[in-house]
Amino acid sequence: MLALPILLCVWRLSVLSFQPGIPSVITKIFEDKVSWGRAATEQAAAAMRRAITERGQARIVVATGTSQIAFLEELTKTEGIDWKRVEMFHLDEYVGLPITHPASFRKYLRERLIDKTGITKYHLLDGMADAHEVARRVGEELTAKPVDVAFAGIGENGHLAFNDPPADFETEEPYLVVELDEACRRQQVGEGWFDDISEVPRQAISMSVRQILKAKEIISIVPDARKAPAVKLCFEGQISAMAPASILRLHADATVYLDKDSARLLSPATLASFSDSTKA
Image (cartoon, rainbow, N blue to C red; front, side, top):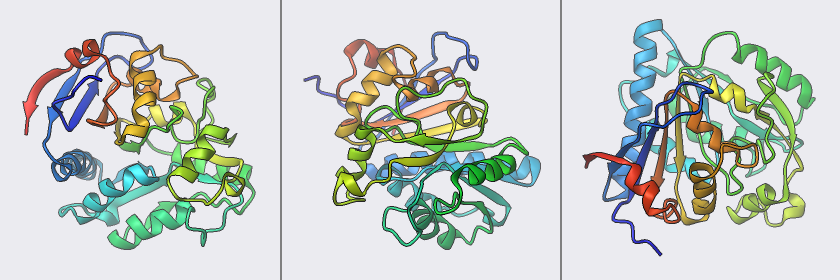
């Protein structure tokens, strides 16, 4: 196995949106998890402050799940963000799961973001209501104005939000009601949100791939060894609906944060393609 002398890679992909090309890659190397979390937080906070300064408001999309916990902990402690001027949109939610369930992403966002910051303008996806109506209603709010920055992860099966492979790369609908594949559902059990796969809902409301790509900036945080196969598939394979997060390579301003474990399967050629311009 290739020994990686890094704890974090930040991969900046600078190509014309939806146009294949050679990405410009920036790598930042950190020695500990504290620095890793701080770097992602600083970038996110800067994007939000910039939007508030320029337009009086920052519109953000927030991901959930185990991989985002440390990032959100840092972000909610960051000073200088006027949360009263932040409008938050929910990335995805299970259909049929009450907000009281430990795996509810509405519960997650309330406890880890809303209650900590006092943010007043937010749009949660109610998985207990009519899913298609929720998708329509929140979608109308979402598309009313541009999104400044979207936070996202990458699933063990390469999914982006709950867009499992083969993902729909064509629809312009902002939110979709999707079927969750077995790999996605098993990931939720593995992360400890459910005791058994039979408990994991089979459907979810998810922001669509094209809608995610409409964000001006995307920050994707992908730690842990269990994500390594998906990272390799999405960043060394073809841009494909079978590797949904591979589409991030076509965004004009996406940054993907990897730790040494999630990057462990990347080839020497891929690692060499990183432009090692900054060390911390």
